[in-house]
Image 1 (cartoon, helix red, strand yellow):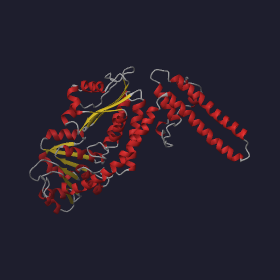
Image 2 (cartoon, helix red, strand yellow):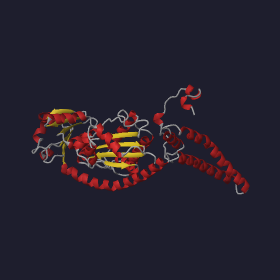
Image 3 (cartoon, helix red, strand yellow):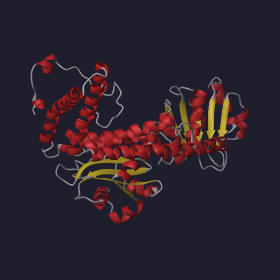
Image 4 (cartoon, helix red, strand yellow):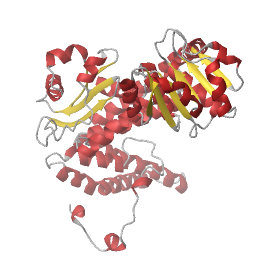
Length: 453
């Protein structure tokens, strides 16, 4: 492989939140910052930055090293390599590819199987395309990562059950309310578990989120990130009538919601059901609310049992997912190796000869057993010759265009996709979203600059 692929990152296992915050790479435009340049050692890059993970993917030539990528990262964040390096992992080439597939499939997440990471990875890719830092290899690698993630979710049960308390709580709410687009939720407390619950509630389509926290500023910050509303903690009981779901996770030592607080609330709600999830220890919601009609209360013990059972199931599914990732990594390795001109020419000719051989076999079958050896040899020579002549112009075109600076991979990749030399399963509607109306004159009226050979 002429080019190197580096994936350097840190996550919730290798770095504390202070380091993750200090070295976040949100909206990092690697082109504008001069990291990716047309003639420089780094030709492509993508930065992924979430609350649990910061990673930079870089495609380089032989002039760049992992330390160069680290230096850029540290400098951009106003830090230093000695401070950053102890917290990072460094993957090169196929190990980088395998790691990216593992991340996309959510096998490296804090909550294995959670769906958010795939959306975050798609956002990071979209930005790298906008910045102009995604080219042939990152384009192919990210699209492959998305398809690997889809395959893992389709062929395994890795995402079929809840594995965190917050996720299990929201899944339980979905079972009770079904479509949550008309439901409002309240978070009591603004800690990590509340934040995770808020994320799952938004993904579940909840209409609105209200945050009540003893430190108003912290609640306000969480509400702002979730496009919700913050209220003073003292308003908690008065606002309960407006919400259907309450998830509580404060550090209070005594219950903050009791049955006596809810009687008037239920009357205002005309007995519409309320769903309470208490994930705090000690509990925030007095068990006596269970005695009220139309109130459903679940505490952390109710959810833990579900989570532990599901975690065991996911570990088994993760083994199947790893096998899929290993297979897809090998397939991507073959594609990387094919990004040279000679292998692609060989594949083109082999494709033509295969087609010719199949058509010849059909013809000989129709002609029957009386075909002479001389005729058979003449037909074999004919079909192979036709195949080679048909591919002569595309091969000559490739040889010319790959001499242009920076054009080789683009034209080779396009050729491989056009003739499907990698034998991919391409659905009929694969490019339906790219169709647009083309003026008839443009189709019939001659050549444009793109047509120049």
